[in-house]
Length: 197
Figure 1 (cartoon, rainbow, N blue to C red):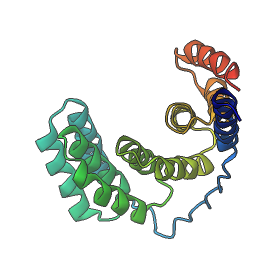
Figure 2: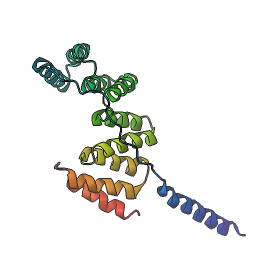
Figure 3: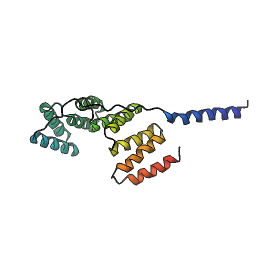
Figure 4: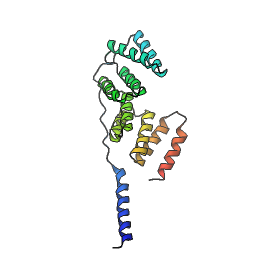
């Protein structure tokens, strides 16, 4: 067999292997049941929570952290406080503190979409793409109408897992569910991806 013919055979084998890679079987995660009672906040605690969220938005992280920790002293099952503490940790560049906070939020409320999305984002930035996928699929099974979850899945499948059919499916769901201005851009992405499959 000539060298050219051997190269062609090897190239065909590589292309065949690559084209079959997108048929990976993904098991849909089970929707967890929240067995913990949802904390009932007093009017003062609700105000304190909203003020702490506003402090995070204003990048007043020390003030916000103190407020969330005070709320947790009174309401230790408040999953949203743990999620916000994880956001503060991320803003400070302390990604090592995030998993424990997000795990605690999910322990208090296994259906907390924000905690699942943050876990997925952290896993994705650390190159743990399969784990990011599982967090996002779990979020999508809990909240199938959450446009941002479908957007994140689309990005993950397109850019990191190169599973273009799945990316298209989630981008299409994002376009259908979203009222954001970027839906025209996402529709263009869909057309570009359709040329790749």
